[in-house]
Each structure stands twice: as structure tokens, then as C-alpha cells.
Amino acid sequence: MSTNTRSIQWPIKHEIFGVGVSATSYDEVTAKVVSAARRGQGGLLTFAAVHCVMCGVQDAEHRKRLNAFDVVATDGQHVRWALNFLYGAGLKDRVYGPELTRRACKAAAEQGIPIYLYGATPQVLEKLQQNLLAMFPALKIAGVESPPFRALTAEEDEAAVKRINDSGAGILLIGLGAPKQERFAYEHRDRIKAVQLCVGAAFDFHAGEKKTAPAWMQKRGLEWLFRLCQEPGRLWKRYLTTNTHFVFLFLREAMLRRRPRTTAIPA
Image 1 (tube, rainbow, N blue to C red):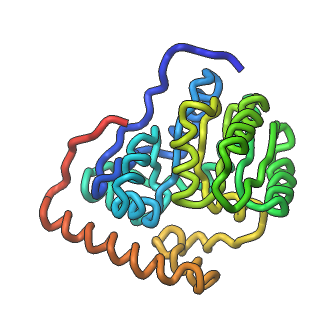
Image 2: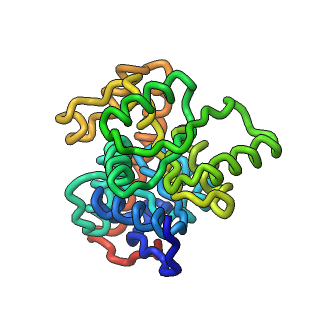
């Protein structure tokens, strides 16, 4: 993998309740990830639905982490709508983590960029590998790792970083769920060489462990309802509190502004 000293120009961010969210698209994110990986420059990317944004709103330390990311893309339709309404961003589609994962793997296979899978259970990772290779036979999977469901010791952490770096992977896909995956990427931003993509439930979706919402529900911002029906015990409190809070903040912001703002903050 070649190294180039030119820095990547990441997409512009706009502030949504204190969290910088990137005005970008599938094509732009995929191109930037590939470019950064080929240059060996690394990078931090996550895909923000309402829950991810609200984790930053409610936790100042996590907000600091998110705002250090190179890309915080609009994974959720509600986040995209907010960006369009408040800033006139003109985004025609969201940047959905599972779909971006598919596109990034396709591009990695075409460009010969090895990837590394970090997160989920061994069973999910096995199915994920099989399905990714079935879609993209040329894809180079440099390593897979299912970390323990607890904080790593200093020795375990150092060993994991070494395995990832020694694998030669240019792209690290992290499926730990928000906000744990963003915390991991942020804490390793100066130690892991690969471009880090926090893709959340993409591992489960591409492994066939969870179903994605029908296209019509996704388009209308109803994916949360589909997922709530799938996992009511785990998700009802999240959606009741975070979604309601997001809507309240958006309505307050919209009334205060009365017209879109155009001031951007650096990526």
C-alpha cells in the first residue's frame, strides 16, 4: 500500500445540537476512505443515526470524541432531514452504515486494499466473512477479531493494536455498537494505521443475523419502528428517550432560527 504525504480533504461538517455532522454522500465517503487507505493516512468515520447524535448531545466527553472524527455521516434519515432543513445541505440520500460497508468492501476488493473486522461474536464474524467473500471474491480479509465483552487490559489492548497493524489492513471495520465503537476508534486514533469505520449493526445485517427494514420504511424514516418490533425489550427505552429528545431539540432550533444557517465548521 503506497503512502502519500498529501492530506485527505474530508467533507464539511455542520453543527447539529453541538455535534458536527458531515454533509456528504456514499460516493464521496467511499472515495475518501479508499484514498486515505491507499495513502496510509488513517481516519475516523462513523455513521450517525439519532441515537449516535444524542449520545454526543448528552455526554460532553463523547461529543468531544465525535467532533474529532473526520466523518460523522448521516446514517439516519432524521439526521439527514435536520441537516437539510437547518443548513440547506441538499443531501438526496443518507449514508447508511450497512450500505457504506458494502460499498467500501467492494471498493477494497477492486483496489486490493485488505480489511480487518473487529467486533461481534465469533459466530457472527464467521458468517460475515462468508457472506462478504461471496459478494466480493477478491476481497482480502487480513484479520477478524471478536473482543471480549468487557474493557481490555492494557496488555490485551496493545496486542490487539499490534495484530491490526501487523495485518497490513488499510480499512478497519468496527462493529461494537455506539458509543463503544466510537470510543475505541477515538482512543486508538494515533495508534491504529488503518482507516477506522464504526459501522455498528452492519456486521449483524451482512451476517444475516438481523433483518433490515423494507426499503419503503427506510426511505420514510421508519427504520426505528421496524427495529423496535424486532427487539422491543432492548430498544424501547432508547427510542422513547432519544428520539423524543431529538425531536424537541430540532423543533426548538427550527423556531429559533426561522431560516437555514450556512456557517460550516471544519471537518
